[in-house]
Length: 213
Image 1 (cartoon, rainbow, N blue to C red):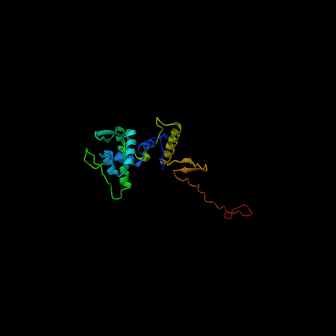
Image 2 (tube, rainbow, N blue to C red):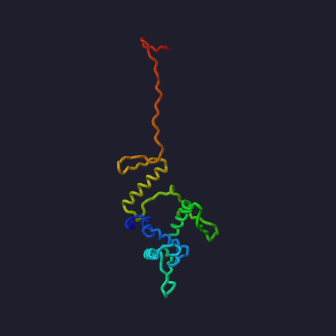
Image 3 (cartoon, rainbow, N blue to C red):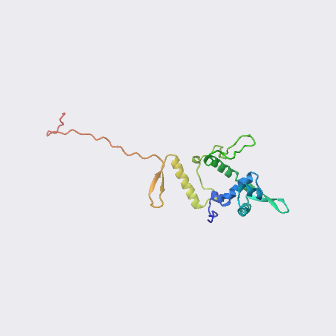
């Protein structure tokens, strides 16, 4: 099956997937962080065919994720070492590993990471670069960035307003694409107006007076 290209998509996540979205690529980068950087060692650790490994290494070098560093002249042999661009994938792999430890490792984490400075098993968390608070999905919202195109800016702004309205208990409306109908998202259901109990008026006699009068 031919792999879909995200090259024309104006999205940083899509562009990251364009570079390392093929699963062997991320596993090669993972091994490079673990110090496994030679062709034969990568082949043995991953159990990957030489042809596929050669293609993936070539692609990662072309994309600037890895660089070839010669360690032997006759015959020529290379280490595949991470560049600065490649080292920036550390956070991506860390979050993927922690997600896998929580949701896909029923017997526990296969590997734990120790922080060298404190000597403790460590887990990474996302924090705000401005205030230092921990970042959670319901505490942030997207806004258009300097590289946004006009259609993307509108979608980001509309999605941001809709999401914030839902979190605050207000009502946000969306249009169903097929039928064009609207439905409310979030907010409490509007109560139906209550009916006042009916008052029974006493009948009047022929003189126009109530029986009690």
